[in-house]
Image (cartoon, rainbow, N blue to C red):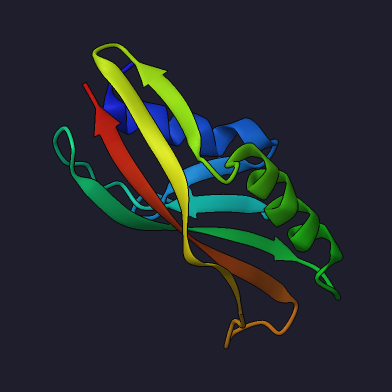
Length: 120
């Protein structure tokens, strides 16, 4: 597994399908997670975002998913190994914020800010 796949693997580990934000299939169904696909070299921190998406009349389901991810990325972060090293994922600041959707008032979205550092 390479470093791109390690980040994608991490986001797919929460029971919702995850997609690179530039590659969401037309037939994707909510709920799902989208994430950025940026990489860099050893010892460089990369700020990224991921979005949680669901369709609901309230925020209960999506907040529960955010809290699950929050527990996985502890205060010290989480290390995800790949073939030539590891990815260190840490919470960003602010960690999360709610967003609305102009096309559908039932869409719930939470944007997560996080940092990725590649350890080789």
